[in-house]
Amino acid sequence: MGLVGQQIDAIYHTSVVFNNVEHFFGQGIHRKVPGTTHHGRPMKVVKLGTTDLPLDVIEEFLQSLESIYTPESYDLFVHNCNNFSQDLAMFMVGKSIPDEIRSLPETFLRTPIGQMLRGQIDQSMRTMTQAPDAVAGANAPRPRANGTASHALTKSTANGTTKTPSAPHTKPTFVNAYNQQSQPGQVYNVTASSVLNNLLARASNSSAIIFFTSATCPPCKLLYPTYDELAESTPEDKCIFIKVDVSQAYDIGSRYSIRATPTFITFLKGQKCDEWKGADNAALRGNVRLLIQMASPTYRHRDLNVPTFNRLVESPITFTKTPPLDKLTAKLGQCGTEHSVAALVTYIRTRDAEGMANAALPDLHALSTFISTKYASIPVDLRFALIDLLRTAAIDPRVSSFLASTPTILMTVLSRSSAAWQSAPYPLRLTACQLACNLFTSPVFQDSLATMPNKVRDLIEELAAACVVGDQGTPKVQQAAAAVIYNFAALNHNERLQGRPDRFVVSEDVEAAVVSSVYEESKDLESLRGALLALGMLVFTGEEGGGCEGLCEAMEMGECLKGKEGVEAFKDTKGLIGEVRRILAGK
Image (cartoon, helix red, strand yellow):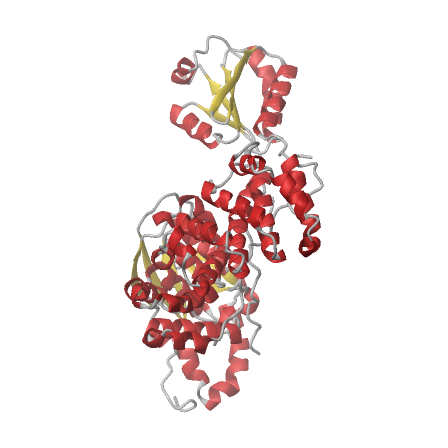
């Protein structure tokens, strides 16, 4: 107290415990068995509440934080464990960690001696805050869960005692932008029908084979090495190998009417495919090879010269420019001075000035409450200002993850009919489409598209379909809407290129709107480019004769594009036009 002029007991380390795992920031983000970290037992445990968020959503949010909470970004005074605890607590239950803990570093730095000793204290504390044990110690297993459950959230506090660079603003990526490491195959020895059902369910989009054997079958044993070899050399996402001893699993043998061993039954996309008997190694190898080829056919268009589309798409299209914040808040009038809106603006300013790592999240739950109750009172021609603030904030995956997992805000600002969007003010349409694009910075949003609650995806598709076909006088809106559709299509595109089914079905209205946009565009180069990219993504490797491709054929899109190749205004996109023409022609 004598040195700094006020009482400061300690600078505290905090962590967040839920689902019986302790989460904290030091050498990156760590997961430990509660109370077993190098910080020791907590001095105090505070119950923050209960979350109903699914475990997989929370896990995806934690993964999105890994680019912000890196080992290099740690700073005892401005970017420490308390910042991480605050972000996680706000996301899960909408509550802050105690203010006296959050404000301690700032309180200390406001003193003259604090500024003088900052570097020395930060460096000396590295052995504790980023101790080797934090890396070497065994992490608790990452949670695996489906569905929703309630998880108690607690915060534990431990007494701990040249600023490092903040984590850079990383470029967002699609969750399926890289070939996923396939799990090595194995033979599953099954005796219970429930286990067999689960394995066959896992193979419902690929293939499976059951080898029916028995302990008293010598020919069966001759096939074991070959069967094991085939299983080990085949990734599990392509084929699941199952072995059933009918002398132990009578019910399974009866279910499939097994009268002799060895018997093999194969399954393709969840349906029985083939059945044969006998100890023939060559037949086993050949039939398995054929099964895998049928389950993972070579995708259409692979041999076409279309480099724009014949690749995995790494990053979504986003809109990152920060608008004049003072002008936006002024347009909102009294709403612009409301506490949760002002806190959002402060967060954006801090993030832009100091980096995402040093910008604490505002109370997004309070913002959600404000928007759900006050948005309708904002004049329609001024609502874009609030949406633009959301768009700017959503560049941060922490914010976009919140919007995806707690969709009240999106349901409020996007709930308009297609006709209403077409007649909406230009700035409102533009910022709404750009906000939809920036949601793709979140892996939580991307993974939730197939099961998005409250029809948020339907609202976004309705927005994009209404805006991508314009009156030729709103090219920026058309381009932003095409970018939304491109992002949707790119997620499915990446799945197809990796031999997996689409994550979700893009609506027929969206497909028709994109086709119409390409067909009708006659002036603006960038509008045509955006629509062509979206169209190409929808059709490339898609189902032959599917909705979008069939519509293109009916409208003679090939001839339409051939005509556009000769338009002077479109000369810089001639190569892209040619690629889409080749995809539609299949050659």
